[in-house]
Every structure is written in C-alpha cells, then in structure tokens.
Image 1 (spheres, rainbow, N blue to C red):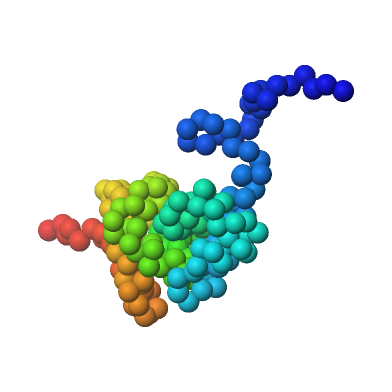
Image 2: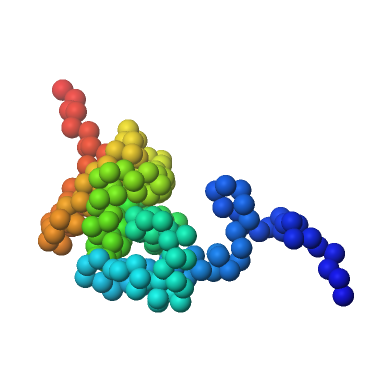
Length: 209
C-alpha cells in the first residue's frame, strides 16, 4: 500500500533546531539521554568527568555526543540550564509560603546548594562564567528569577524597590565563585545573609524635633 506523504513533508508540531530544520525524534531522545546521563555523572563526581563515559552511559557513541554538544562547555551549559529549571520551578511555591525577602533567601540557599553539588561541572562552569561563554543564557535566567522576588518584595515592602535584578545576580555570582573556590559552608551562609539584608528596606531613622 503506497503512502501519500512525501519525504519532504513536515509535521508542524515537530521541533526545530536553531537553523530552522526539523529535529528528528530519535535525535531529541539521544540529546535528552545525554543530558540525563551527564546530570547523574556530574552530580556523583568529585572532579572532571570523561565525555566518553557520559556517552557510554547514555547508550550512544562519542560522535553522537559531539554532534549535539561540540564542546564540554556546551554540554555543561545544557545540563546547567536543565538543572536550573528545577531551581526556578520552586519560585511560585516559595512566594506563596513566605514573605518575599524570606522567599528570596530560601531560593538563594537552594541555588547555592545546587551549585555546590555540581562538583563534576565546577571547573568548566568557573571557566565559562569567567570567559562569558556560559554566563549569558544562565545569568539571564537567574536575573529573571531574582526580578520576581524583587517585584513582590517592593510591592509588599519587604524588599527595596530601588534595586536592579542584574546587580543582585552579580553579587550572587560572586558568592557562587567563592563557593567553588572552597569557601566553608558557614561563610556561604553569612554571605547570603548579608546579601539578603542589603536588599531589605532601610529603617527610617529620621526623627522629628
């Protein structure tokens, strides 16, 4: 029985790559398997992870890995973005449960813990942040998330209304770099407390005669 569809026909719901070409379902599955395998490997590792081991765990060849992720940094960036999805997903729940300043502080703790546990990605992330090769997409996502807390906090009076989200992200990245440099956990806690306190409204100390 002949098929009416031609090889050039496209499914309008089929995902496309950045060049606008349809991404085959098996290619998407391979990409998802590689990200999942990399997430597990990076989380469990004490240091750098061999890309060959990630490909093997995903059940694909190293060539397939490089087709999807030409460099280690591109793979780390994809894993980092996927992991950040879970971190940003908790924002609505935090804002429902806590005042904005406490919700932001809790989110910072969750974000710092996420970064600290990614030991297998640490060096690549540090190099990527320093060079700017990883920072733009991830940093924008963090800034967008921070803006949600600041907007709620300004409306409720629990956070300052004159703070730029990008400035908070810059300070948070500074804490992140301190963590990856081996700062003890109690110092990380103090730094996050100081950052949160700096974002709270200053008490009005003006006195009337």
